[in-house]
Image 1 (tube, rainbow, N blue to C red):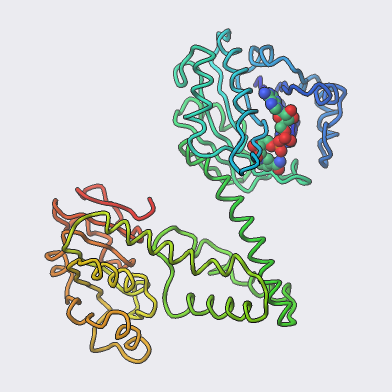
Image 2 (cartoon, rainbow, N blue to C red):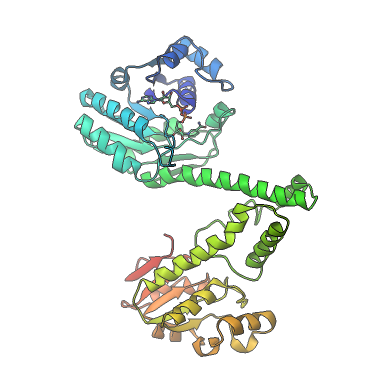
Length: 437
Ligand SMILES: NC(=O)c1ccc[n+]([C@@H]2O[C@H](COP(=O)([O-])OP(=O)(O)OC[C@H]3O[C@@H](n4cnc5c(N)ncnc54)[C@H](O)[C@@H]3O)[C@@H](O)[C@H]2O)c1
């Protein structure tokens, strides 16, 4: 396939060298003449293991060339990868000037193209950039339409500098973001690698993925370092602690606790985070990430409350009160907090939870409810039917299997707010809102 790559930086050069090595004819495009000359002389314009050899071999074989002439490159290409930089401005916002210039140049060149071209953006850009910036620039300057005249795709890159070639060839995953099948069929065989899992997703999802990954990596580093700081202050070896942490691939290094939904709660997470951060404060150790966990959870609860209060509906039924299905533990359950706040705002609340029975609450569980929802007895109903009859607004608070088929029993005038995404198929519901989806 004939390919152009705009931007001969770390991502673009590795992409160009590897795709040429796969047998494609690749033209690298960059305004920096030094980089262009370096590549045409068979050398890498940066230090990156393995790239020098790949460039030398493929320039020698005539599969890889570089140029400053974007029009000539576009004219000779079926697929154009955009790998230009998207740096931060001083205030942290995303600087799109290089992307805008590259898209303008590609658009101008596309005007003269008499073949179907696919433009694939690998640069990291926020959701909406493709629709709001890239496509309008390409369309305006080419006088052609995205879809019938040229394809667009977002294909984020997950390589790490220093192991970039290895990561390009064995990536953790491949993401192809596009809304049209013809484009997917062109891009997919170019970017698929061995056993790497492949996700074909809408454009905006592909744009967001890289930010989620990098935020997660950044969070992991700061989390590990905060644990390291407090461990060292206890005179403990943080690596030994984390080696034990890594053993747990069921709850720790896993997908557990990573699905957006309701705030955390229960008898352990809130109290244990509080104890550790309180101890850190006593020891004068600054742990901003861990300290802000409780505040973040409260902000999330406020968000959930506001979603409910945004509807001026008096009769509310809460379905599922305990912090997770299958238990009657109400200590620090987010739905208890929500119920309390709704009542405070004058809502007429009923609560149904198959596992919560007032006579059976004892010990710390009972004390917690006495302190936070003393009139729970008057709010609890014995069965789902009674709760459904009362509520014009139904708030689903935990993943009890009994709620999966709610869509079959809810009336046309009832609104459901699902905090936990338990309803398997909300399509039949006349009024459905997911908390975060
Ligand atoms: N570096 C990484 O490890 C990495 C990994 C994954 C994703 N990314 C993302 O990939 C993108 C590129 O990152 P990078 O580190 O390779 O950037 P870089 O700064 O190393 O290279 C960008 C290149 O684009 C060139 N350029 C600027 N305007 C151009 C134009 N109009 N036409 C053609 N070329 C132009 C620049 O001269 C430069 O050579 C960024 O969005 C980055 O966030 C980077």
